[in-house]
Length: 290
Image 1 (cartoon, rainbow, N blue to C red):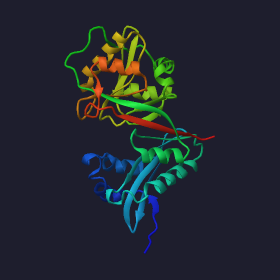
Image 2: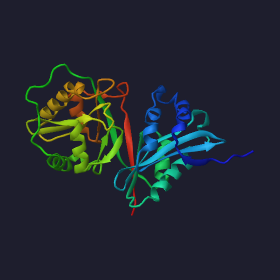
Image 3: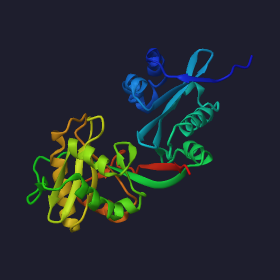
Image 4: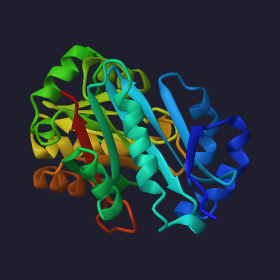
């Protein structure tokens, strides 16, 4: 007997099935069960499950991050059902859901650079690859750097203007990674990051640092201006300030734009490739709606 794959809204009572479905994904450290109840209740969020004979075989959601910018995330297929073609209809269902929303201007997602299937799904639904962000981490330092100060005189507007004029944002079409999510870099976004973090200065070099949107990891979001030596000092000082933010493994993280000079600066500041010292990238795909 053939059974039809159906889609419905994710419910609080689905949590046990989601926990079972993801128990072996990401080495048992999948974040999805931890955010399930939050995603169920968030506004401007469409959490969906794919059901076959009353069993959840896949899940994902589309969420409005900023007005008109819809983010596809959490796409999962039950390991025992992988390879059966369930990811494609769910992905398409989420994209179609976003397209029906008033004022939609962009649909986007990020995925591992070697995830060929998701890259194909993204392109088949009209998305284009706009940036590949390299992932770095740095262990905390016991001492800070002389000459680095917390910059309290700059407003969010002033920090944004410096960021917008930088080569970093030119290479990513104006997006920065806030944790694992690519956000349009706006004045409002910079203000939100500054509420949870700090702007550090050394000479003419400044860095935007802080916790991710969930307050569980410490991040370097942007660094620019001044000399490379001064940029190295502010990044090293950010590593010293990691304990200031709530986190679970004591590391300073950073997704960088695809610019070799930035890589060199981060490496000089003692940052290293995050995945067992192997290069790891996130691909950011965006569909612009006319």
